[in-house]
View 1 (cartoon, rainbow, N blue to C red):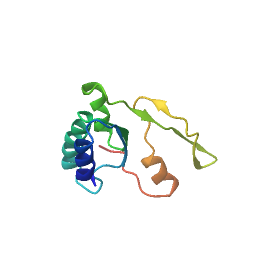
View 2: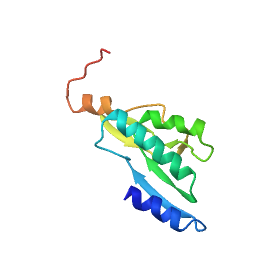
View 3: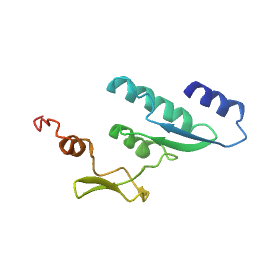
Length: 115
């Protein structure tokens, strides 16, 4: 599908296309996911498209400093009465918080706080 999007953007160079991508290259190891995602996002930025790429990869947020057409937005969460709560307000910039360890703790899973 990612190749298809690039092909569509190439074929419809004069027509803006809207795209949504969720967790680009999910299931790939960290290093190769980052390299592939970075290259793909740079390629998208050169095309006549506009869209949203949802990711938990914090390294990809740095692309906003390198590519003028890339911006970061996020949603925030709070833990209320032992449950994760979201207000679904879109905020500018990369997310300043993470929640995976909070979720693990809430589920009673072990957490290794050491580096």
